[in-house]
Length: 286
Image: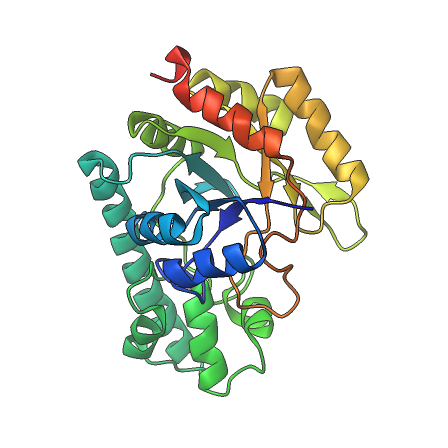
C-alpha cells in the first residue's frame, strides 16, 4: 500500500483543492506522509500543517520553484523549507508577481491573435493562488476558443505555441540556493519526459548539468513520478546512485485533469521520507 505522496498542489498555486481538502483526501486514502509543493508559493503550508494534525497525516512543508534553461523549464522541489522565512517569502512573492505580468501579456497576445480572454477573469480563476498557464487555459476554455485545457496548451500557450510568454528568468541554481537558504532540501523534479515515440528526453543534459547543481546544494532527484515506467525509474535510480542523490517521488497531484493519477497513486517507498528527513537534519544541510 502506498503511504507517501511528496509532490502535490493546492489552491495556493494551480491545484483544485484547498490545503485542508487535500489533507482530508490524503487521510481518506490512508496516506501517512504528504508534501505540499505549490508552484512558487508556500502560502498553503500553514493551513495544511494544521489540517495534518487534525487528520493524522504528516505534512512536509515544501515548494516547487519553476525555473528556465534554454528552450525548456526545470522545476526544483524544496522539502522541509521554513515557510515562515522572510527571505523565502519575499523571493517567492517576487516570482508570483512576475507570473501576474506574464498572464497579462498572454491575455494581450491572445487578444491580438483573435482569441480574446479577460485578464481579470484569469485572476479570478487563480483566486489566491499563484497565477499560471493552467488558469489562462481555463479562461480560453470558458471563452469558447478551445474545448479543453490540453487543447489550449497545444494551440495557444504551450512552450512552442504562438501565445507563449517567457516567465521572469530564474535559474535552477538560484532555486537550489533559495531553498537551501530557507533550510530546505532541494530536489530536481520530474527530470525526464517522453517524446511521441516513447523515447526518454530531458530538459537539459543531466550528465553535464547535475554536477553544477550538486555543487550549489542539490540533494535529490525525483525518481517515482506519474507515467514513469520501470525502465525510466531504473534509469533515474542509476543517475541517483552515480551522484549519490536522494530519490523522491509523487503524483504531481492537482485534482484537475481526469487523466492524472489520484493522490498517492504513484508508489513512493517510506524510506524516501526517512532519508529526506535525515538529509534535512544533517549538519551538511546547515
